[in-house]
Image (tube, rainbow, N blue to C red; front, side, top):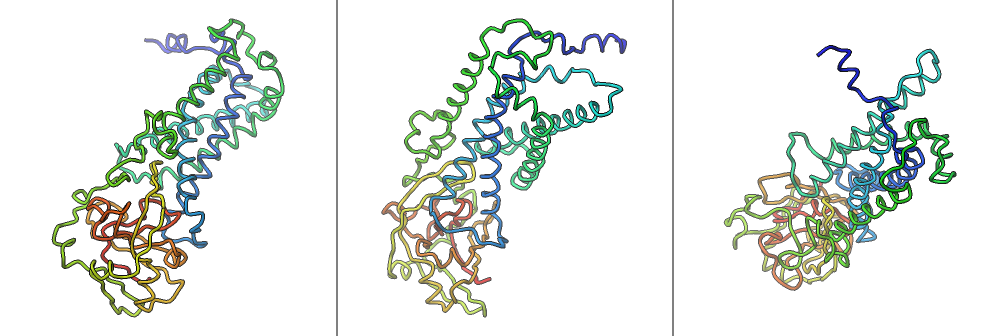
Amino acid sequence: MKAADVLDRVPRESDFTSRLRSPAVAARVGLWLGIAFGICFLTGLISHYAQNGDQPVPFPTAPYWGYRVTQGLHVISGTAAIPLLLVKLWSVYPQLFKSMPWGDVRAMTISGLERLSIAVLVAGSTFLLVTGLLNTSRWYPWAFSFRPVHYAVAWITIGALVVHIAVKLPVIRDALTSDVDDTTHDSPTATEPGVVSRRGLLRSTWLATGIAVLATAGSTVPLLRKVSVLSVRTGDGPQGVPFNRTAAAAQVTAEERGPGWTLDVVDGDGVVSSWSRDELAAMTQRTETLPIACVEGWSASAEWTGVRLRDLLDAASVPRGADVRMVSMQKRYAFGVTELQGNFADADKTLIALKLNGEELSLDHGFPARLIAPNRPGVLQTKWLTTVEVI
């Protein structure tokens, strides 16, 4: 096939004649898409910071439900962005085939920046939403580490979004302040009516977005669990709480969790204080209602009973404010060792839990003992504890 024949098959802006593909539609959908992206970005920063071991400013312990809300918003806003992005891309698709304003340096510069920002924005947005959706399903068909790559691409995408808004701001402002049927900024060839009106298209977009949110928000919002048919996790599970990782998958052996198990607290001088499970159960027990809030978006509240971590640290003569390292018996997967900042270690609600909802911890929920702390990502609520080390 000749090059000329190939070029003849490439669409031109004039080939798109529907009045629905209009800046009036794109600006309105883009406004809500930008809001969804903004919420998703800010809550993603919170989640990323909460999971960092090195925190210049310690993550707060209150409100105890804070991480549950922010991570739920992160997943919900990301889900809402999917139908919004699809409609936005459909509405601006003809712009890909708009000819460059050759000969006008200023116009060429603006057009070049616009196209570059759009290319980065579309690629980054698609990557974030697709990988984020797969992450909620805990399916990782890639070789890279999800969290740092997702975090880096988020910054690139938001940067491209800011550039895109700056370039298109006059058109966006004019489109949003004019009637949705205004044709001022339409392509001259966009004269054919669509299968629905512009208002009808927008209503359908808001409806699709609302359905997507309702179908997934039950992972975080208990009242919506009966209608959230697409939620990967509903908040229900063994002993009333789901889990992501079983003891078998983590390779926690029967010998390690048997009668000879002890929880060792190692102070800053290397002195070890040990407690058997029976000795822990004989100490003053406290019960706290705290959520498990997972990075995949699901969460569930439960009653946890056990020994306050600060009581153990006091018994081992560990000073207040000390950061500690929580060591698990697990041998596979990440977060077998986590760091707990001093404000968490000293918090009244931070427990070495022995019971869940009034029952002995099941093996998959962390028997013989696990950490449960307020306002902390679920992946850092270390199960199958064996050692607490002062850092």
